[in-house]
Image (cartoon, rainbow, N blue to C red; front, side, top):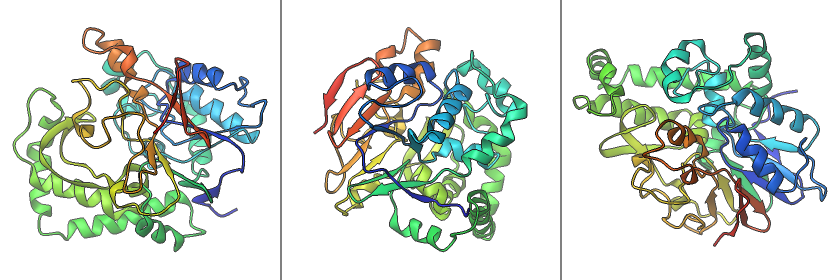
Length: 350
């Protein structure tokens, strides 16, 4: 069956779960508070929907993905792919993926262990199955995407129907690579990567200015439509900042300010904080409304349900600086528009 990047949600009440990031224990607690059986079945016929990023950084990504696969096969759950699943499919080792990529295991151990590693003989089957999952889920009253609902990028995917997801991703990246290599700033980018990039991973000291690297990241966020939907588009930052393991010259754009459609959109990805804290990630300060229960966007019909459970490792490694209560896993109940957290708290949105 050809790959279907756009799939349909069932016409049942839904529980839409934010980025889990391998925090399997928190997910099991949330499942209980939502009233589901251990296998993902709900006595009233509700269905689970995940906004992506089930894996990376947390203690047990293999268990989380295995649980979802079984629930999905039984018809109890659906997901859209997040940027962290795309990294697995693209064979692109990133921060927090040492549970899967041997090349990252030593780098990631300091922050993220103890963790469960993916069995080597199961990796191919896992990525083959993930490559069948959609980028978009929708029905007339609701749209779900990991990071950004961007009609102009979705149009590019329409033209690629029948082509496998990984093949699409690589083709878009090849086109992007050609445009970047022929850009007038590309030689400066190569120089910065050779001389400054190794310094960019020190959180305590910024490297020398890297404007061509910022331009590279800016173009890369916009020219591959699959990456744009799963990572969002970026703009050039006013000043470098440290996030995601390196100093960055681009920052995320609030695309929802230009979203004027009437259909609500539920997203993850953006590290919302239930209890705003001075140690919040600099990349996200000011991006979302300060009220964590608020909808946002031009029509106030976009909601980010990622409440930063993927940063729980910070509280485990640095308990003097972070409190576990800062990092939560949430579900948005639809059509009730109520939040349920892994600690059992229920909060209406506004």
